[in-house]
Length: 147
Image (cartoon, rainbow, N blue to C red):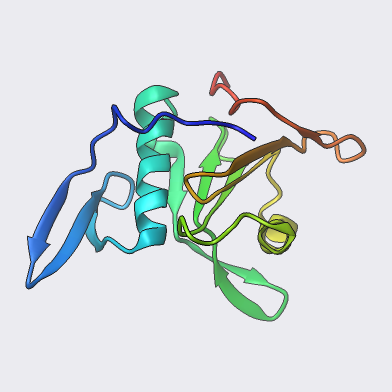
């Protein structure tokens, strides 16, 4: 499991009509701050601010076809050739990261085909190097973006 220190990260928040919204730096818009969105935004801030992942190569909540269904992945980071590189699945803090979460990510992986998989609820975070399909390795930290 990977540990994050989100304490130095700050989200841009606002109150509108009694609801809290957060500014998403990738989608460049205000979104309602649900528990899952809270985790997604802290992860985005960590990737962008701490690990220096380029904002222009990150996609959030995009539709993809999974079999005959339309689904939305949480986060995909692309390499500099715009090939999907890291696929992240975010859950609300009270939702444990389980085998079910991994199966959800793997259903998206069938379409997106990323070298790295990330699962998090903000408390539990796992990342796998899936670049060698015959030898998937769970990692102790997130991969550096040095592509």
